[in-house]
Image (cartoon, helix red, strand yellow):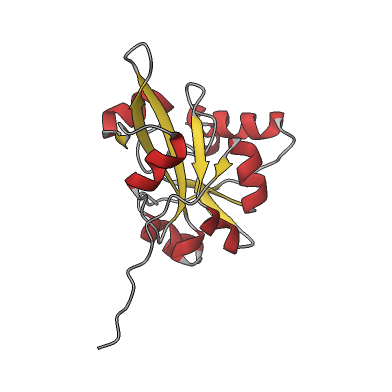
Length: 173
């Protein structure tokens, strides 16, 4: 029986990283790290150190869907208006689970920041740069890898731009 590290989805992530000169240390777990909270608990990291790879779509000129993968801290949410401004499109929306799977080649919970089925625009929120090490999915909901934000940006060929929602302003009473 093949191990998780031999799974084609994980192998694709390892191969893309290796072609860029990076050796990833993939860790696997018996339980899913499907949510950012699950992943943080399992790897012993802060929620903010977990990289959420969220798939959004916009219409391509030929009418097909163009994927946009957003890399945000596990503690953050993508601000759709900010994302639309960064990509210069108004018709950006969150991909359905089926669309995310079809466009990236991975199921939600295991979508890595790179090594997608097709060329994909990747936007990385600068908040991830606050950490020395962040943790990202390695192709399966039970596999993750640690990486520096700078290496992550290079591997994903990501454009860094503020796309996370601003925290609510506390008002003095």
